[in-house]
Image 1: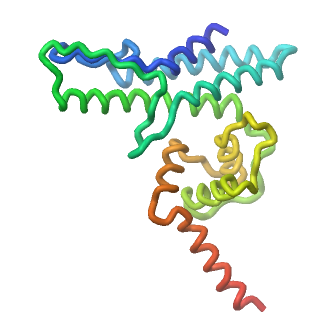
Image 2: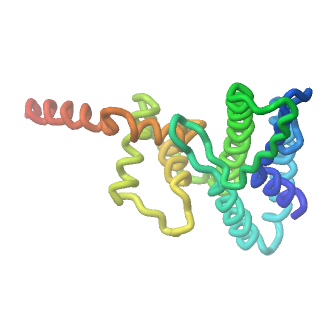
Image 3: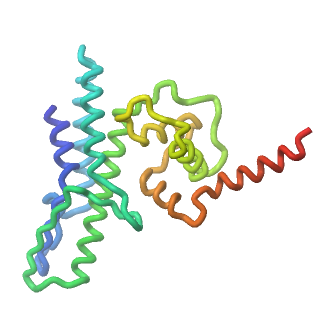
Length: 225
């Protein structure tokens, strides 16, 4: 379980070090470069997947699947989509060394850098959670969606929040539903699922497509022989 532990530890950590007037001035989990951190996460992901493949070929396959799913879900819960699309990390910690005094500009820059790194973490945990807990077995169909991605998201979200679709297992996240919903129509779900849902539910007309669909349906039924 070493690879899995290393991966979870990295994703669950969000430690920022900001040294004003020093060079470099910003570190996230001891890494200063965005692309270097992206590469680090990818490496940890692949190591974790390799280890998982070994585990699920054992006699305790179902137990390992539950263990991985449970810990991955708990780790995803470290993140929350906030206003304006920012992502909150519940374990965020910042150490600032004001060598020349703090300025608002430096704090704003640190916030932007931090968000970039946390977005990488959120994308990573969402990706590996989907790969491990949402195998694409028998969930596609002979039909494909011809509308926009946001329209399919709106319909799926309506089913979920209105209670017409409920998980058989209370521990299953809504991410399972949306992945299955999009796969059924041979579509890829939004990369930033939570952010897409947040923007949709906070727009002026959250159910814009459903309203248009209802109007179009009634027009068709009025002329249907």
